[in-house]
Amino acid sequence: MPKSKKRNSRPAGGRQKTIQPFSDDDSSVETMSHCSSYSDTASFAEDGAEVDEEAAQEDFEFKLKGFIELTMDKSAKTRQAALEGLKSGLSSKILYDFIVERRITLTDSIERCLKKGKGEEQRVAAALACLLCCQLGSGMESEEVFRTLAPVLKSIISDRSANMSARQACASYLGLCCFIATDDIEDLYMTMECMENLFTKQYHAEGGTDNASALHIQALLSWALLLTICHSSEVKKKIDMHIHKLPRLLSCDDVNMRIAAGETLALLFELAREADAEFYYEDLEPLTETLKALATDCNKHRAKVDRRKQRSVFRDVLRAVEDGDFQSEVIRFGRERMQIDCWVKRLTYGVFKELFGSGMQFHLMTNGFLRSIFELGPPMLLDAAALKAMKVSRDERVSRSKPSSWSQ
Image (cartoon, rainbow, N blue to C red):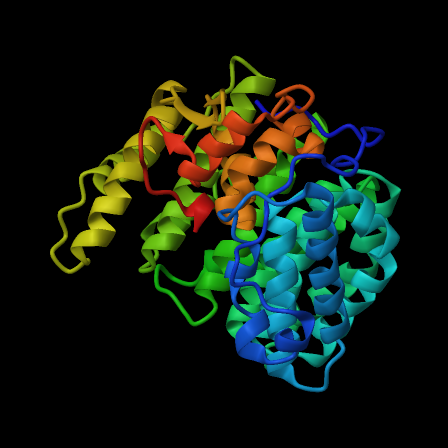
């Protein structure tokens, strides 16, 4: 199980000696002023001729400074592309020293884009807020970022006139920012309440779906993530409040809502049994019958890919609810490996993988904060062979591939 966050732990790390050089076709800052140039994520590619590390680092930071300036541009297209450039940079490297010096400026830029932007710009800005917190690690600096941006994220989430994709992203990244940064129990509980106010609306959807279903899914998953760092008494309170209501969502028309509800139920059962070995659920028989039906669903009215995804997930959920079992999987990165051996760890890994994308492997190896979450110990020194292996295999090699709403 991922380790409880230590608020006094060291941040992600200082300046790294091992860097990822730029590709040969990188643009200058002048060229980056054109949207098509600086929005190209190839500017953070890892392949290329060997270059002087210090010069490459300076070049990298010079480009990031250009992106930061462009987040204040009048053009929405330019701002969005600059945000994408920053997102790509923070996903692919450890930049603690650079970030600390510009934390307030970056926070102001993100806040401005969230308030001024629409749709995709807001979505990318919300993701960048999470990456900023991940770079800073748990502590006062990331907590200040969270407290500045949380009200804006909540405002977008609750704004029914806002773009639905932006609202979904804000719900997802608000939860993750809170998980990373907050050291205040009231902030934690208020964020969870914000999520509850959203996904509990689905309890009364009469088995159907609506346009807000995707928003409710993200709120449910964020709430589940935050539940994993709550005090045991609060965990028990939330389990008692929701474990009898969540099964209603298993009949939703939206397959992703059914999967999110099923995996959250598996998580609640795991947490309940961890707290009380004699945990008893009086409605276990009807629940397991529903789960068995979903694990063997052959309804021709559902899309074939949806049925396959649902059956795979609910076989695991059924084992968790009925027997308390979990089928482990192994994540390999560089010369290390990590075992995903419980639902808490599966959820936590999934949300960070969604945030970092192809940079997840690099951050598992080098990001001290992320390694502390998964109890991996201090970062190992990366040599040339390890970096080469990482370049060859960008994505984690998983012993068993399975669909999951955690990583959607």
